[in-house]
Length: 307
Image (cartoon, rainbow, N blue to C red; front, top):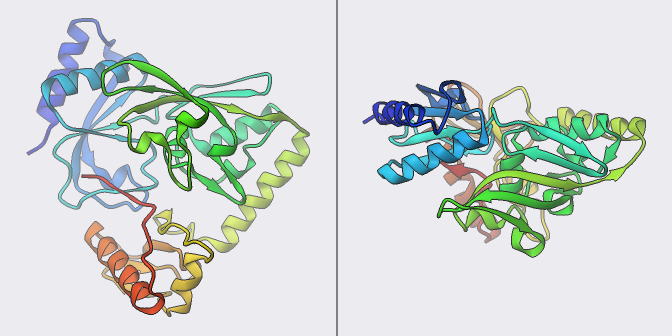
């Protein structure tokens, strides 16, 4: 059953009591295939707050009414169910303010991570070059401790603001951020990221731009960017590249329905031909089973499952 009627009622109440302005909260009912990197998933009620105040008010109202919700950035690391989602999906991509002050970059949770890298370059700040080409949001990147090419959020995030399950705004810094390999405290504490502060260094714009262009060229050469995907599907195994094991197991090009292990990069599962989420899940299970049998190790997914 769709949560859209309940979401519509929530919005009307929030506007009526002045918690949000009418234009501060956009709502719709649409397929999740339009909101996720794999381009799969059934219908859901979708809310897009345009202000932090609107997000906080919406979350509070949904919690008060017992309506389940899921926080989504660009959906570039999320697999949505084919049958849709009965709660409310809150998409944060309209919360995208950024500001550079000295050697600090302040960014809202919905700002694109690639855009943050570009913004840093325009302000001659170095340290976020690795973000250029990562398709998620700042919030998603901090949540996952996203990284690439010897860089990761843990190296540059100084602090982050988040909404706690109790409805309070709290700042996290240092060890409280709980960064590990593709991990952060926000995966366990139930908080919703609102913004982050990146501690960078002044640098030469030309050198920063050259490094960003080099990283993007390497992505285009090695990754199947022409197909819908959620990027690297599996986490790295200690001491060995997971993609190498998948390649050596002869799984490149393996298909389940419209899902395929990329022939270009074995670490990517792609939506090759109108795949369903079920196709992707079954292919993930096949890859994990094969590596377990051939290598005796259990590989883990980087992907988050909307449920």
